[in-house]
Length: 135
Image 1: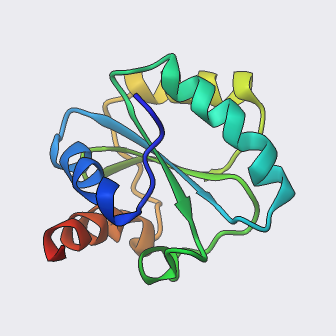
Image 2 (image 1 turned 45 degrees about the vertical axis):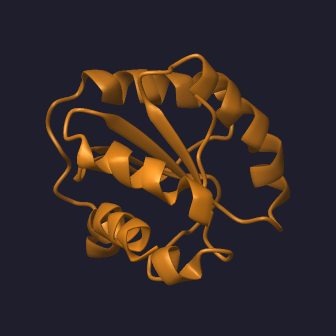
């Protein structure tokens, strides 16, 4: 499965992924101007291609600031990993394929959500689903 974005034609697929409470959704919060993000994009796509049962979303915090604008991104890439609407992980990651792949695999096994995620991160699935319904 390719990496999804928040462009209008892919919003329905993103919303469907978040609606499945058993599905893992990995969101990479990045920016087009960030060289680290540009370098990380290929690794993120490779991880996604190797895990077709997980949905991967590339969210540009500036291009889609209406959704991501309130999320405090301290460094890139920042990953938000969900199972349905529940936040399983939120934080900065090393932009290395092996490191991120291990994190994703670990989150695929985790059943308990984190309670320390900021409210803006917890609200992201609802914002993305609402955006899909508005179109």
